[in-house]
Image (cartoon, rainbow, N blue to C red; front, top):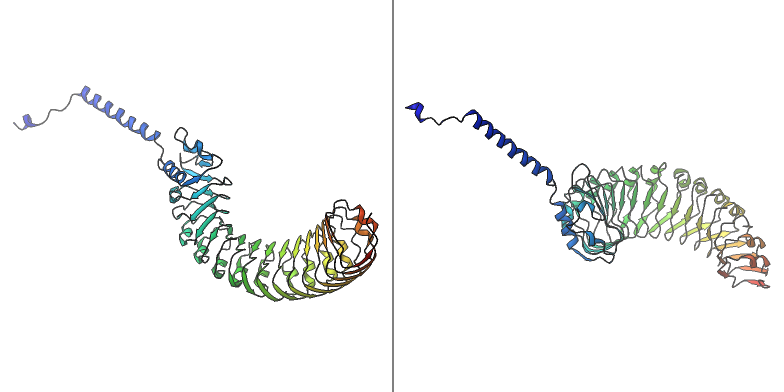
Amino acid sequence: MASAARPKQPRAPAMLVLLALLQLSLGASKIKCATVPDNSTDVLWLQAFRHEITSDPSGWFTSWNSSTNHCQWPGVRCSRKHLGRVVALRLFGLNLTGQISSSIGNLTFLRTLNLHRNGFSGRLPPLNHLQKLQVLDLSINQLNGSIPDAITNCSSLRKIYLTGNILVGEIPPKVSLLSNLSVLDLSRNNLVGIIPPILGNITTIRVLSLAYNNLTGSIPNELGKLTNMWKLLLAENRLSGGFPRCLFNLSSSLQVLQLGENMLSKELPPNMGDDLPNLQMLFLYDNMFEGQIPASLGNATGLEWLALENNNLTGMIGECIGKLTQLHILYLQANSFIGPLPSSLGQLTQLEELNLGNNKFEGPIPLLDQLTQLKYLYLGNNKFGGPMPPTLGNLQQLRHLDLSQNNLEGNIPIQLGSLTSLTRLYLSSNKLTGKIS
């Protein structure tokens, strides 16, 4: 009886048929899985982003439709390894308007987000899930609000460009947690507060731009720890104190230093040219620096742009200035320099712009006939006397010449008539005679 109650075992042929059907079923299932993208949501997040665009004057999004795979949409790049996953979104210079949808924060494979030079408004989108993001460029838009701490969750970030927006609030100190950061550009916003000293912990940083904000306080000594930095831009804030000597620790790296239009004061360090020998651009204009130009500045022989205008600098311009033979731009106007101009100015054969106006220079104008690249020459409002040097006629590239409000006398050199590129000539308030033929 017990054996009669057992279910009958299928015969061997029936068993084989069942196994075959099972294998076919599993095989069909595998084929179906392989054809479904492993990111079926990425296209949805892109569509949600597109939905927030209120103006597309160039018609960029006309091809963002279901008839084309989203990886082929203009501005979208997908991973080769992870099918369908979006790794780059580049939509720059298209004059797009609207808000940046929060859906962008769900593109978790995104490495580059570049929406530079559009008209996006609203707050920064939440990006805290983008742990693979390396480049964030939202510069030159109309984004407002503060910079959220959550941006530090994007732990792979290497470059942040938020310049040219309307961001407010303070620089979040937690930015220092982005240990791979090489570029931090927060310039041209409405940021306030101090420069967080803890930024000195981002030792990988190469470019730090906080210019054109409303930052206050002194330049923190901790910036001297950023020994890989080659460009530091802090101009047009309300920073105070003296010249930041901590930057001398960056002697092997620093090439561009922009501190203009702040409230920095006191004398320039006498050794600054020795300790920053690799400088190529030095902007200290519109501050309250006083004293003389350090003679050591002549040892920064790679300088191409030197802007010291609108300070309280005094004394004579030494012959050391003639060692800066790579200079293209030299601005020393609106200070209180005295004495004659050094003859070594004639050695600056790469000069394109020279402005020495509104000082107290006197004596003859030195021979400048070697400055054949010069396009702009401003020597107005000084006390230069004697005749005008006829060799100015050799400056065939000259476009603007201002020698007004001096004590020049004698005939106007006939050679000035050969300056065929000249568009502006100021000789008023002198004692000159004659005419230009």
